[in-house]
Image (cartoon, rainbow, N blue to C red; front, side, top):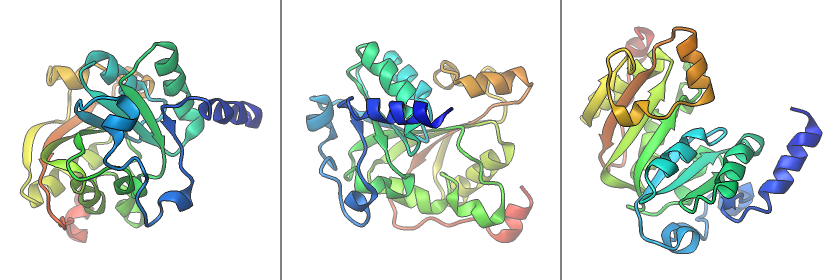
Amino acid sequence: MGRKNKLARWAELETIDFVIQPAFEEVFGKDHPLKGEWGAEVFGNDHPLVLELGCGKGEYTIGLARRYPERNFVGVDIKGARMWRGAVTARDGGLTNVAFLRTRIELIDSFFARDEVSEIWITFPDPQPTKRRAKKRLTHPRFLERYARFLEDGGIVHLKTDNRALYEYTRKVVELNGLVVEECTDDLYGEGGNEEAAAIQTFYEQQFLEEGKRICYLRFRLRRQEQYKDLSDDEQALL
C-alpha cells in the first residue's frame, strides 16, 4: 500500500466516531477517560463487552458483531491502515455494536476497568517464535496478567492460530497456572469442533486452509490473580 493511501485511510479513520485513537502519552502510565465507561459512552447500553486483540482488518470483530447483536465488540490493533477496512465496513453496514481501538496491546489495561470485559478473542497473532521475542506473545503470562485486571473473573479467552508451537506454548502455560481449559484442538476443522470458532474465517485463515495448514483452537477461563507462571527455558525448548 502506498503512503498516499495510508494517509487517506488514517484521515478517514479520524472522521469515524467509534474509532478511538489516543496518543501514546495520553495513556502511558495513566487511564483513558473511557475506562469503565465503554457501555455508556460508546455503545449506549450495558451489553457484554468482547475484545478482539490484534484485530488487523477487523474481519473477526465484524463477523462476531453480526453474529451476536446482543453483545458489544471492540477490535484492538496498532495498525490504523488495516483497521480502516473494518471500521468502514461497520460504518457502511450500520453496525452499532462495534468499535475499534488503535493502541499498543501493552497498554490495554489503561482502557478497561475491572470486570468491564466478558470475553477476549486472540485471532492469528504473531507467534513471536524466538526466545528473545517470547514476552511479546499475546498469551505470555505478562499479557495474561494484564487481561486479568479487566476481564471478568473466570472470563473466557479464545485463541485461534495456525502456529502449532504457539498453541502448545499457550496450552502449557494455561495448564501450568491451573486454569480451566474448556476446549483445545490442533485441528479445528478436521475434528469438526467448536461451531462458534469455526463459523468465521479471516482472509488469511482461508489461505492457511487452502495451503493445507491445520488451525489450532484453545478456549480457557482466566482466573483473576496478580502473577502467572511461565514455562522454563527447557520446557519451551521442547515446543
